[in-house]
Image 1 (cartoon, rainbow, N blue to C red):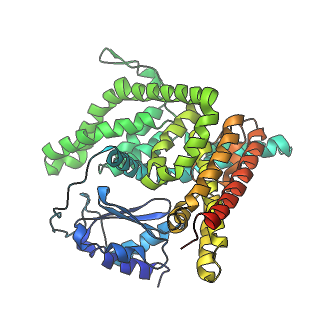
Image 2 (cartoon, rainbow, N blue to C red):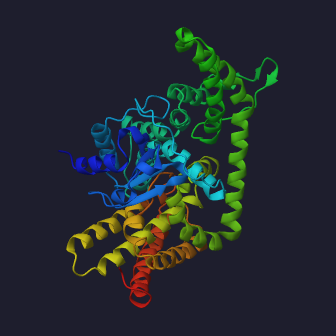
Image 3 (cartoon, rainbow, N blue to C red):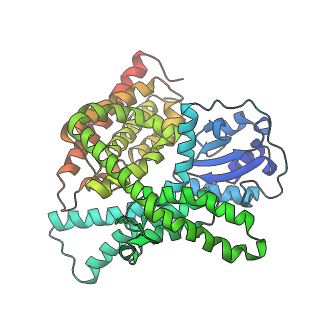
Length: 466
């Protein structure tokens, strides 16, 4: 019996059984299960599953998100085994034939759009994060060791490190293209192939297509050009898949799809994506130079709520474009770093107020430590939201850290997920200079201590933990 088997069995029952499930996936810490009929879902039972830290209902997306923690992938695979769920390509479980319930129509306002965007971006960017972390961390450690410890890389060892770094970042268009295609329910290999087109060694020779000029561009390590391209490619693929006879579709549909999308991508979409990247970089430079001391505290305080609605994954392409265009990220990465640490400090403060429940105190403490390391959902949902006044302490710590970070222009030189105490090496620049890493330590200490003390004081004066 696996660790999550009981949880999965109860979750399956609470979701209304296999016939009421339309899709299953996971993000960094949550098991995401989409339902067909809301009336069959037992939300209260889902809130109290064993080996889980709570529930995040997303009715706008017809989805229940069960908070697991860093081992969510294990829970995901066990749920697949327990439920027998399989994707039949249409987003519905094999054999499902229940009609969608006529629940009240969701108001399609700005929050609905933000939720939709976050839900779309999360499964695209999360699987790519480990490659970025590995590639970035190994290069950052190399720079640090060479600059401060006199280590030399010679021959194959040096080029192996560079090859791993290159594999993590330069081929991002292929990774993102694949994941975007999978999210849009078309053949993932076509998304990867579109990304490969942008990296092809022959691309510089494509100066025109039937007399239409192709703007020159370099698309390695970029995200927006291929992401936008696959979004446009999806309806093209689905059109051909509908009109081409099934006996020929395996061969003909991919060919026709690429013939149509490749010129559009190279002439219009990829240059547009690059232009958008340049605009983002210009805006980020303006913020960093003119208003960072104001922007960073505000953004760091708001970041936990961006995570709550999934908007943080939508910021990943922006961070990647900043790294590609400017060589550093002084906006999205520092705010995530500060915010995650503030959440951890507050969760640890809440844990210290528990006197008579050793198990709960230990669980809350582990959530706090996990948040300090960069994974905040268990702490945010399982600890802070159950003690709402503690969020004032989190905001206080985030503002304090954000003020210092904004004043010194804190920036990272590696783009990766889950920023926290374990990713301090991200602040080492490409020459191996650790000045910003030392500043990051100061920001992290200030944020941790301030959020912890502020939360303890607030809990003692404004309200006691329930």
